[in-house]
Length: 362
Image 1: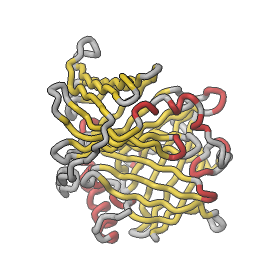
Image 2 (image 1 turned 60 degrees about the vertical axis):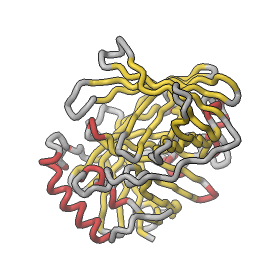
Image 3 (image 1 turned 135 degrees about the horizontal axis):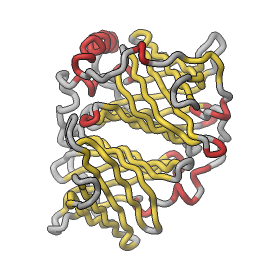
Image 4 (image 1 turned 90 degrees about the vertical axis):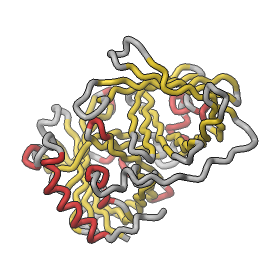
């Protein structure tokens, strides 16, 4: 995958400058002093199976029924509006041995969007992270029924504005037809207004329109879209410490005219995983979803703290316990980044180190 053409040393200097500017740009951003201290004890790998550590390679958890619920959406589609005119094309693919579903949308004007759709076995919920080349991020969660998927999510209408709800329903009409119906509520889900009603049809001719680039996210004036630029590139990953094991290689690239960051990880024994990350402008938060071929899913939200990107989220672990997760990407210099994962079971009062990784630029 191709990285941006920007010089990496310049990127590191840009990050330091952005950090100095960020308090004015985002007054609510926590300071480093607000991040709780970390305990030096460590979880066992089987409690935090990231990057294949502690996982059962070759055991396909994603063959289970919950992961198959969105398979009816797979395929190459021409998508028509209610006026009968083609609105665009959508290629929907199964990834990571069936543990994730990716959407590749192109409208008839060449505008592109992508989504990563994942099933969380711990919660029984499906999740979607959508981003397009105009900087529109949509975060959804929901459940499936036979031949149907219903996902929804609340978001500010604009920065500091009232909450609106997006609700999207996919319905299998026939083996070669699916309906996607998108509604929006601005009154707490009391009433709904249609936003999009798409008729998906499998047809022999499938020719996405050539991409029409957009400069929205690449603009230097939109600093928050560049907070994570230091991670773009090709990296070797190993556990921290003098005798840290090599974990694998990861490629982090930009797509959608710079609006989407995509991780592709390859580890030992052919193990693989991937992540999408995108900035959600109305909430002033970044969102990141990781999923691997063993069905491990971790969804996080975060922002720039000093010069580090700090994300938090929750995951359901054994015996139904809910665990807080925190991940920090801290640039050491232009060619090295420390990635630290921590967990908490007391609502974030204390944190326990789960994994620390060093990324070295290839």
